[in-house]
Amino acid sequence: MYKNKHLTLEERNIIEQRLNERESFKSIGREISKDPTTIAKEVRNHLQFKKTGCYGRAFNDCRIRKNCTVRHLCGSQRCRRYCNFCNTHSCSTLCPDYHQEICQRLLKPPYVCNGCEVKKSCTLEKRIYSALHAQREYEAVRSESRQGAQLTEEEALRLDSLISPLIMKGQSLHHICVSHADEIMLNERTLYNYVNKGLFAARNIDMPRVVRMGKRKRKNEQFKVDKKCRIGRTYQDFLKFIEEHPGLPVVEMDSVEGRKGGKVLLTLHFTIPQLMLAFIRDANTSQSVIDVFNRLYKELNPDVFCSLFQVLLADNGSEFSNPSAIEMDSQGKQRTRIFYCDPQASYQKGAAENNHTLIRRIIPKGTSLDDFTQEDITLMMNHINSYKRLNLGDKSPYEVFASLYGEDILKKMDVEPISADKVILRPSLLKK
Image (cartoon, rainbow, N blue to C red; front, side):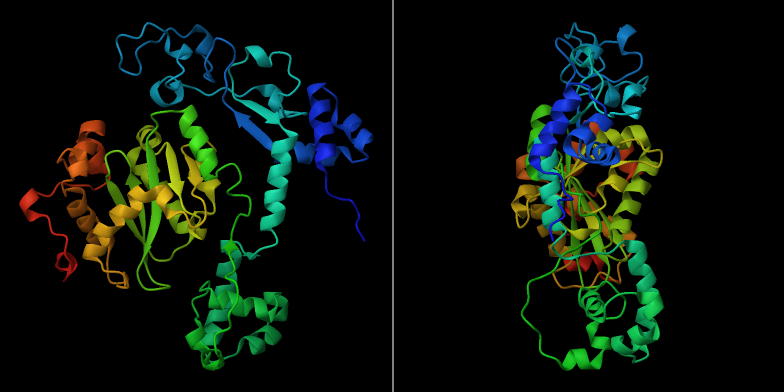
């Protein structure tokens, strides 16, 4: 029986209208016959963050913006405006004295700026509740929740530590499920799917009966950690963000696999200088990607990291399905923005895909990465980054990156130049 638990677009329109009229959650809930906590959760779950500034003034959320007289942070001596009026550059990325200010009104109900009387003169980041935006997010989550399966990394590790050793002993999943029902608490068929998808150390080949069975034709399932991770981070959102912030450097990230279930590469491609970094990981998990960014954030220092990795563009791989852990540092401060390409649209980050062909010259497709170390991968990328390109004016990515950001940053990332005559793009480079 339909219990009418979900909010409709009509009810969301009422919520937006009443927020604009500065009504309380209690009065809104009374009007649409919902509990006030339901209204509060709805508003907080579907906030839109807008850096719009106000009439005559650019967006600026620095605490000292009102009395700031700093000029020429961008390096242009021709500009006569104060930097806090600038629409082109952000004080948060250029000014060493920047300290973010968050409106204290947003920390208590109604948590949004919809009915704020000073919204038209405020230059801080605004939080808006939009009925149409909330409905789209709700429909996206509802649609995705009906596909695939949801399994956190912690839960996957717990199950793996319990199930894989028993499978290696020759036990069947049925025997394991019966013997450890209180610990596993999952359906037997679900565990077969997890093993088939390579989520555990044990594989189908470790289960003799499964190997003898013919493969059934079925639709591929998607295993995702965070079902809401792509909301507000689609390729259309990326294009809109770049249009609003022209000139921001974009880094395309992707994974390069060797043997299925073995080590894998994370590649980070700077689209303008065409320089690519690569990091070897023991498994293709989201935590391994997070660890790489945390290490870069620490080694480069926050200021340098934030200037280099302002925008990230990734595909829809599950290893990129925890965007908040990549975007935020341990203090909860935003250090980058991540967006996702459309499914089956690798051409949207074609620069990285094209650069992967150089990696495949040295490590052919199908070659296992298990025997390679990070030193091997760094050596390979140094040769690739020293390879001169026609579209870079016969310069190498190393030379272009050094001219834009300096060689000191390259040294911190273990990027070194290789002389032109010594560049090797053959498998022999990594043969031991």
